[in-house]
Image (cartoon, rainbow over all chains, first blue to last red; front, side, top):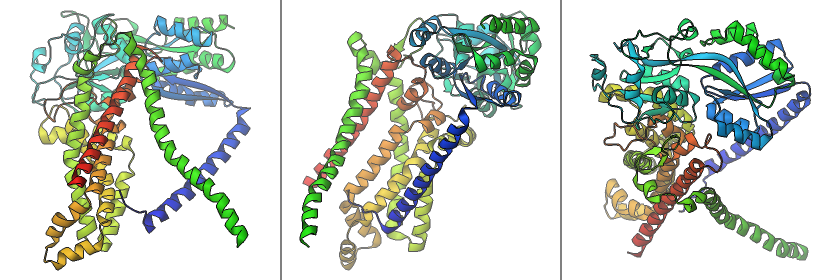
Length: 318
Length: 297
């Protein structure tokens, strides 16, 4: 290969180098500033569930007003990612839309010498979404299992007894989540039990929001995501436990009275007993102001009794 | 004068060794990376891992509770199909654009062209992926009446757009490196402009052009984020360009974060890394042999 750097390119290189120099200079001085204030400002690292990332962000923003000396840094990535970070000891609180598995708890104990503590901070009715033009309005758990599960027979919309001209191929396009998602685990367990697997060939997306967005532009699609992500381009299906039973739509009321079949708790995990600012933060999450944000984000807040239990659990640990 | 001479005899070996070290370091890095990736993944090979299943089964169930299966055939087919399609689009367009920029267009147009192409190369891959997920998805559904737009076609077009700038700029450099005397000689013999390109420039610049194509291929095979978003990320052996697929790189990117360190899943992901490494190695080696073959003739 014989090509030389010509004049213009070296010119560009110089520009780049100079810019890189100034950028690194800027970054260094900024770091210095932060180091100066970090003694006064406590940072809570909070990562995990993609379902909960909007909620956690809203909490963090509101808490900045409650206690300006504490800053909560939120990142998503999936429940699995949050748990992995908790096991490695790099976060203070892991958000999870599924429970930690026993072997994960074991590994966290081994790595850190502290047992993870579980806090239920809210509930989510997991919604099954279709395109807004889809004539289907309700579905049973059995049908969902046939659509999503390995060995299931339903692959066409007509098999669900509907005529759907907007989806010409009649093929059901399954939208799923990547395997580090807690939503993925929860949905699989709810449909297929402890040992079942999904059919291969589902489109596995990376975020709760991506799922809803894609369904909004794809007439043939079906997918699942937290009910907080609903938009006007999609429709939430009513869900019945078995054929013949009434179907319920996901809402705060149906979640609360237990009629909606696929709802789940949202968890926060800390390493060992939470102390200091982390404890104060969790106490605030259990407060009325914190729980108000849960319903604002589209999820189901804890009933008063469970708030008390949560606060008591925190109090006892002091 | 004498002092200067002595300083030079002293500094010369130092500089020479520094440069030699820089050269060797590239080799050390490559072997170091290969060693690390292989060491992380090799543990499972000694625990009765089924290599036949790894290469021939399309069933990829790393997180199943009852029956874990690690077959990569569908993933290999995914990477292969997207890369081949991307190259089928990018190579003719890229080389054509390189020839046009280098031989046919006016200097003023050439400057604009090169800036635009460099701009194309500067777009981050996640932005390409986003375009694939939103704009291209709807476009493919509409144009092809497909049930979903996240397909081999979508990923292939996105990857082609990403590798065209590389092919154009390196290809153009290769063509420019052909001495003007070749062109003058050909024109003096009465060749048309097309004949000059076809009979003289392309054969003279073939090594550089092949390098351009290869770097494009490498970019396409190694790209992660854009294909993760644009291909639909579905474990499936494609039957047409309108099927969704999942690539090897996207699988590593999506799953490594949650795979517990040193678990089977983690080690299999590293084996996929070794597989990717081997694929690029074979591609480069073949190209090298082809170039040598051409030279011998």
